[in-house]
Length: 101
Image (cartoon, rainbow, N blue to C red):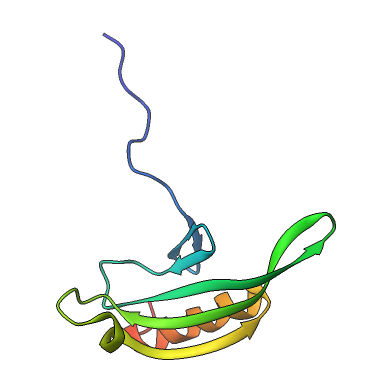
């Protein structure tokens, strides 16, 4: 009988040890099982070297507690230019609110 060697758990792109998942124009950074995640919405894109890249993003640090309203869940907000700046800021927010890994 042949063994199933295929990994059944999805692997996500990670940045500094936390998952980075895109769904349409929204990027989620962090683990949904932790107290906070960062939601980044792509507001506008530019073309660089023939590729569409996010230019302006809106960030929200959100509590993952399902018992509170979505409005109350928003802890912090900011607008950023450039994907690197947005993800780096999101990483700093999570390190601050969750504690360094």
